[in-house]
View (cartoon, rainbow, N blue to C red):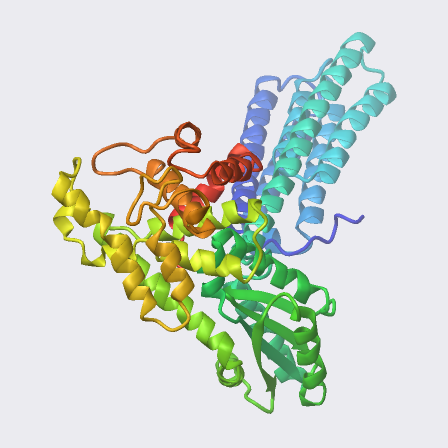
Length: 546
């Protein structure tokens, strides 16, 4: 029987339940014997009473003997189901024997036959429960036919036993199905706890657990092991420039690319942020160059990343030593990045830091400038802009408020409308911002865009009253993006508008204050997203932290 030898029972809750059911079954059996003994005494004038009393006492002693066995070891062991099945079938056999020996017609000693079925349905696996229930129904039916019991009573009682067996088997099947579902849920929770939800690669805990097991196996077997660590170059710049949605997609793309070149037994994990690790069991110094080149080729053209590696046993025999060597080689690889790439990353970092400082002064957050940059990029993409102008536009949108660094806090955070003098002071931020940026090499064009990001297409804006196409296209885009984010964000003096209401306001003033093409491009970019995606994009823009 396939169920006879089961896996060891390691679940403490299941072990306690089986122990409790066993103890309950023993004492119920003893209670039934006691009731039977009382019945024998009360009907002593009937036949076979001394024999029946002796059999009852023997059964009680056997049940008590079960309690003296090493039950925890039996219940937790591989042969527990065979033990339980044998114990229950022996009880069925004893009950059938007692019923056959009792000359009373019909004998009440057949009623306890219900108990083994109920016990089996409550705690046995389906196969064991089927055998127990079948033994009761078939055993009693055969006994009734052989002994010639009253047909009407025996037939009715066989049906009662069959109905009870059906209910018990349903309960056993239902309980086992629930147990399987629970086990599946536990397995799924265990998998989720070890998996990165964004990329579906192993998370740090999952990867380190697997590394520990593979390293222990390598120590035992003497087989080599290679650990590679990867770090996406300038990942923060991607988040700052294109938003977290683009950063998330880059992380997913990294996993897709790496998974495509790994062997079936290789392991891939995301350690956190933009850091990944790959484990190559069985690979050592002789093949590490090929493996690292394979990773580089997979990432080429889409995911700029630096790679470091270490090998067991040459570079260490513990996880800490292997990670240490791999990290040192990773940092050495990063130090060799082309100067222009390092300069671009530095430019994005300081520009974001400047914008964050202004945003904190205005409302205590670091959201507005990055959000405006995201909206500006969406408008520009809808208008057909491409790199490198798109990157310069994001930079200008990020820095559009940098001139407010010299504006007094009492004006920046005033909860009500500005008076004329205060408004004149606030209008100077575009000039001050442009002057600041013009002093930085390479930002002359960005400085011009920032200076004119509050010009209106009808000429009513500031600081120079430019109109129409005289306003740089980038400045017109930033104005729409800035106004949209301002209207959809809470301010000390008003609640945020919905995206639909803010867009309606922009469309109302398209052609006068705002460039109509830019407003249309923003509407198109918002319409291209589902409501859920639009809300998600909004949340990502607001929660961007670099």
